[in-house]
Length: 133
Image (cartoon, rainbow, N blue to C red; front, side, top):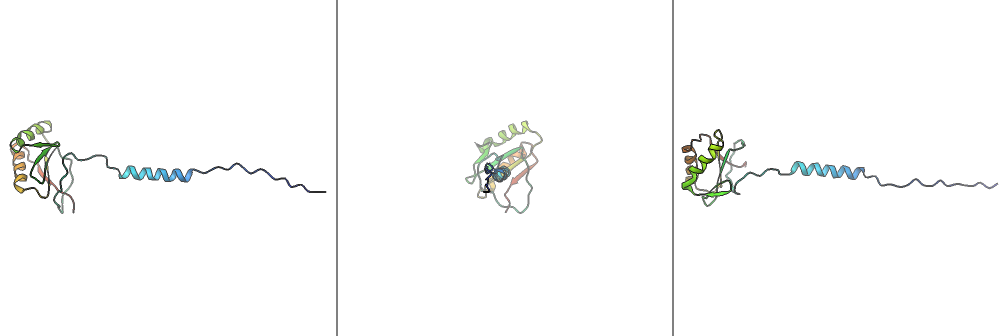
């Protein structure tokens, strides 16, 4: 007698998507973690380097550009009206301080002028923002 060999049909082939989904989720987590969510208001300045300093969330941010221009809330402010702008912002947050974000090439006289205007507006907590070395 002749033996008959019966071949069983192959099971249907499928592609396993689990490794691809693992890679996609790892990339998604990486991009979420490394994304920048909040930008600090103001103009882009090249800040001076400091060895020490702690980051704070300022109530009033005053930026001083390399050409000694003074900026508050992304608007250029005349030095003569600086005290009035600071007083207006101080009424919105009376317990807040003032942070001067100055370009490294700005004149010290302009920084002193901003600090004096803040003190004359009644703000005692005046600090200068720097970047880490």
